[in-house]
View 1 (cartoon, one colour):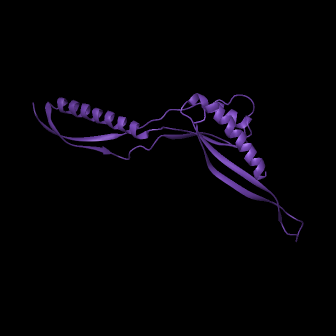
View 2 (cartoon, one colour):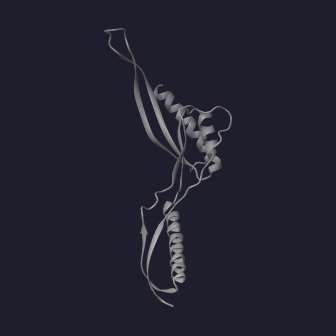
View 3 (cartoon, one colour):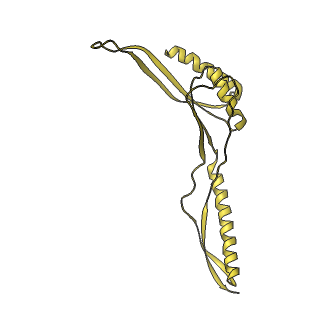
Length: 177
């Protein structure tokens, strides 16, 4: 594919995606390659460049999961011929991690209270609180890797769920009731 043809094709894809998602859509070129295609001569002959293959990789980020399938369909109908992958991530993983730590701390306190009560003790004060183990990474899930463009039927995309975990250890001082 010549660079001119690639430019026309990617322009068509980008125009269609912006029409679908709006002018402020999060669409970025993340890779562009131009590779020679060789024609090999019979034994003893010298290989020569017969053409070039251009590849333009674009990343599209959407917040509305209902638009994932239509983005793929729009891009392929406009000329994209390779869907590398679909990845679901969380925009603000720190917010989820903070919520998980809070829930883990509340659970640790409730467990400490239950243990103290079962032993007829009371918690005087909390001495230390620490997150234990490895903090969970930002949820990121790849769900599709298709090397061929989908056909004219709408592309169904099924998202999954993310699990963010946190573990908290409390050290408390106890006294008799």
